[in-house]
Image (cartoon, rainbow, N blue to C red; front, side):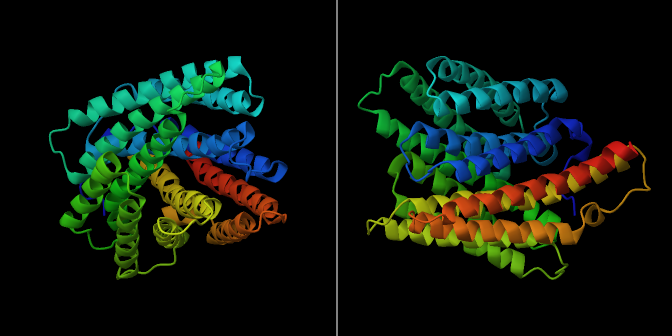
Amino acid sequence: MFTGLSLDQAPPFEAPLKFFLTAVLFAMGASVLLILNDPLAIHTPQTIALVHLFTLGFMVMVIFGALQQMLPVVAGAVIPKPLLVANTTYTLLVFGIICFFFGFYLYNTFLLFLSSLFLLLGLGFFTVICLYQLFKVKNRSIIVQGMTLSLLFFIGGFLLGIDLAISHATGNLSQYHQLFANYHYTFVLGGFVFLLIVSITFQVVPMFWVTKAFHTKMQYFIIYGMAASLLFFQNPIILFTLALIFSFYTIYIITSRKRKLKDISVNYYITSMVFLALGSVYGIVLGFAPLPMEPLVVILGVGFVMSIISGMLYKIIPFLTWFHLSSRGVFDIPTMRDMIKIKHMQKQYYLHIVGIIFLFFGSIVPETDLLKLGGVFLFFSNSYLFLNLYAASRVYFKTS
């Protein structure tokens, strides 16, 4: 099950955990804002605040927490002094995200400058350490290469984001502002988030759900095809076609597994791939027809990214709890499957799906309250997710 992993190099349990739990709290905050505001007014500062509470507060926080665990264990890239690095990154990120949110929500110049400083230090500090350790890895598997490329795209994307934030703070929006914004979105979401999800999927799907391995040529094709498209073409049809191929192939790999145990995390993973496929088809059609962008944001942002992150958290936190306790010589502990009750995960999953449905139809029919209703379901879904993850982590602290 753990082929290719170096479990003895894993960081302390506390290092990634704070990122995971805080990320879900930020997602709850984004849900509240969705209820209280009009997010379809896409160019307002309040909407920028809301979107980044989700992207920075939820997505990046979870990804940075996961990288602290994945780099040493999967890639053999050991982060030195992991608790110090985690605590420093976490503190800078939390202050940066809070200042960024209030900076745009209140459109306050001082807070925008302050957020740019905190985020530049926090994101840059952790990303540079990760890249340095990845470049030192001798066995550069396709997973290591994918992680490296995703972090390189992230550096480009977040530097553009810092420039955009400072432009708002100074009121000096140049003629290239929209161009920089487009590259910021595609580098962060397509280059960083998508490539990292792809790279992690190639490793964890066969490991966690005992499937056959992804074909090596397919791994190279998806990772380098997406990287080349982002750098040289910026053609949405090519990008979405690659994403569509990846989604179908992943669904095939998961559904063709022989040991089909009841597992909510599998439902999440398949759900996320279905939404990625739907979003990819919508994105391809968008290249030929003037369709609204809002449904695509819901399908990919909440349907694809939030679903896959939720499913992975249901796997990662119980696994880390079990691993760190057993490595201490504690054997009288629940199994990974027993740390979170299945019925609680099922209820949270259904709330999540209903929330996506309301958000989707609310994005199509904006004059209704469907979008706000979606925000309500998303809030309760994330609240349930937090309680479930806290229950699994509590097993570690009670037992240790």
